[in-house]
Length: 338
Image (cartoon, rainbow, N blue to C red; front, side, top):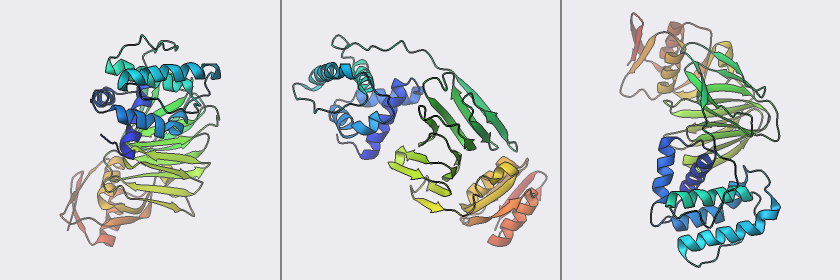
């Protein structure tokens, strides 16, 4: 079985999550199922060989005195799994990480650990604190590292109880503006769906509502690395750069903007730039305390425009004017139709 590059990226991510004790039950079961396949050993070799530098990228410098021990131990693991074929030599920059990967493989395949001893402290259970912003509300949060987060309506942010101990990892759904405190030793990592955003100290906006067709990242200051596993996409964004990704087609665009309008929602301003009408309706439902329904078969228009603290009716009037659509209102329900 030969994995695609995208599948390899996903497996790497699952291994990293497992080792860091951040796997959900579904992710752990997915990794376990893959490792139990009888023909998974070549992909394991491929991942560890081909993507070594990428795997090591997130790991601290190891104890160099254990390099020879690592090579010997992992050679034994390879022989146990596949026979006597020699392991391709690497120049490790993260020995402990590979030892942990080997331990995971041994553990999940049920091979046993007599040839291997993991010299790490016991893993403690991780709990999370979740912050939520209700529909029509914006929530501001200051994290323990000094990072400021502003959550847009209908969004959530999850922090592990060990946040800022050895790493700064958070999970986000929805939209948020991050003003990240600088710490070169601890990159700030945001996971939202298939997307991972990594920074050292910068300010940027992430829009990644699960129900929307588009996800977007816009940088105000500093540099941002964006990785989307499902697309095998890795991009660096600089100040005033905007990344938009269509989750349905995997098409994306990276543009330079003169003015950052994408975070004006913090001031109550709605801003749309060629956004699908369906996503715009979802945005209106999150912002206003009324229900908006799109009821037409061919409503695939793209909407652009800025609305400064306008009423819902005023925004819908503008949308209908530019698209030629109509709407009817019954109490707190508004139906847009042809």
